[in-house]
Length: 458
Image (cartoon, rainbow, N blue to C red; front, side, top):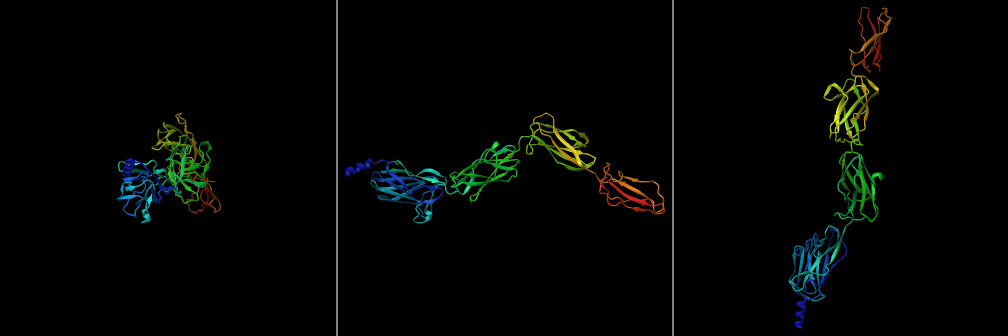
């Protein structure tokens, strides 16, 4: 019998035995629990060991405090050494005195018998087949992995937030973004499917933004998209007519899940047209009005041209001037390559407050790109009343000094350019020749023709 026993021990080999984990059900990422790893010997142990490797990102095992996470205890149907267990980083080493075939060793990881705080915390990343690697060494020669170590599936927890899975998009204002995707996730960022169809509301900080489930010619504006039951991802596209960095927000309708924001970068589109400011403006006769001529994309965002653009200046009345030289008129001006605008001054002295004067800016130089022309109206209002330019007329030059005969006096008030000034107050004064004058002042102010009428009686 002694020889047989010695022979059995001598034949014991590292890596023998089997193991299971209890419970073996799926584990929610980041959750706390207690797990028992049960090893069953397939041959006798004599001063041997088993080594259990706790997966990385789980609670670090410890045997010191039952009130601290990852508390480990060990029990056996066989006999353990005086110091039954030791910890080396994430490795739990069980020291066995004797263990017969089919006898078990239980390693309790996250033992909560002292306190619930002793439980172990699972990794926060969802993963299938997370292995609790177990090595056996029945006779303390060299530990080796058993044939099949136990494993657990770590699954996502309940949905708690939305997340963009696509990077920040950059596109031109005359185009659209590439596909954008939003996903439902647990608190640790693991994707989690919705149980039933879920509406995702979309919004942008830009007034020029819009969304669509389809791109290109199939574009159809929407304010929400839907994640289908059993899925966790939804796609959409974004357009914006305004050059800026707007923020897009996705929120789950009817849910308390955390919204998600992501900025996009909207660049100017291809330069295609000229615009100018101000539009349809009113200017005082003789004053200089400054126009800013711009090269823009289809949405009127400034867009620089790669080559200098000579802009022809046309006006139905008045003249254009360089903003730094009002001594000479000009008929064209250049927007340099890489720039988006140029300034030019305009002046006219002839009043037109009703139909205005047509002003046009043309790109007729034949240099690519060919820019669409821009037209606007400018209205000229009279300047301030100028007494030296104003006129006075009477209906007769001789009058009888009988207190009855009178002279009708018309005063035409104009500015320095001869434009009639309406709304002016006129006072008539006549030289007294000794008999006394009876003056009837005009009723009200000057009319639209600048005329006010009064009388003088001697």
